[in-house]
Structures are given as C-alpha cells and as structure tokens.
Length: 138
Image 1 (cartoon, helix red, strand yellow):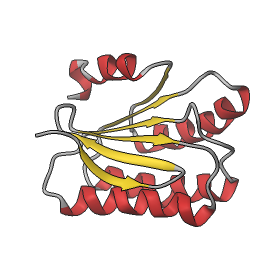
Image 2: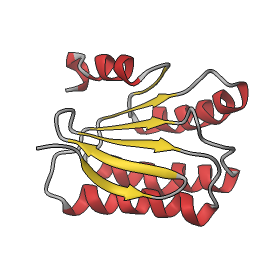
Image 3: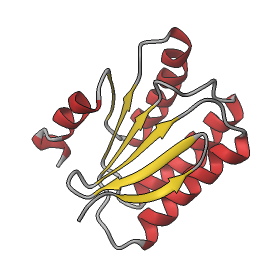
Image 4: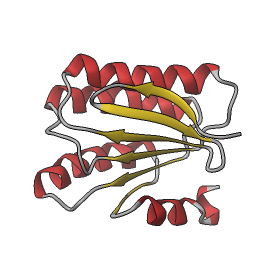
C-alpha cells in the first residue's frame, strides 16, 4: 500500500505513511485559524474512521509561516488530547532551528509532556523516523 492523501491545500499537505504507521504533514506558508483547524480535523477524522493504525505524527514546519497563538492553543487543548485518546504514540517535528518556531514548539512540548506523549524536534524526516523506530515508541 502506498501513501494515502488525507488533506491537500495551498498551506498544507497531509498523508498517511502506511510503512511507518504515521501521518505526515508538510506546511507551506501562512494559514488562518480556520484553515489550521480544518487540517487537524481532517487528520483526526482519518485517524478515527480509517481503520488503519496510526502511531505517529510527523510535522515538517520548515516552510510554515507564523502560527496564530489561538491556533496553537486550540491544538494543545483539542487536537492533541483527541489524537492521543485515539491512539497516537509519538510525534516529531522537522524544522530549521528558527528562534520563533523554537518558542512555539517549546510551548507545544510542555503540553505534550503533560499528556505523556513523546515529542522531539529534528532537522530531517530521516532522523525523525530513526527515532520513531526505537523500541520504547513501538
């Protein structure tokens, strides 16, 4: 089975990688709060209804614009706990080390820690997937 496209728009593409049992999102530019929510609602619906095992979430934010603080709060309060309740086991973010993105990511990391979700930051998808293969995440 090849990758399954879950979401495709001008600001993000979301696919399911069956080999890794992971949802991958690649962001492009800015998005409104409504657009941000629409992506995650599509991913959560896919996770809930596809019948496929989804252990991980990989987000490539190297080309993502600034995320509205209200979007981040909604992600932390709604999307993240729902994904965990639906079986998410780990999350990884690929980014370029940008200071503003690091601040945003550290806020999300604090919330992921509260829920006990392993979350790490990487410079490449390959490094993220190597980490996801460690026995404690399987």
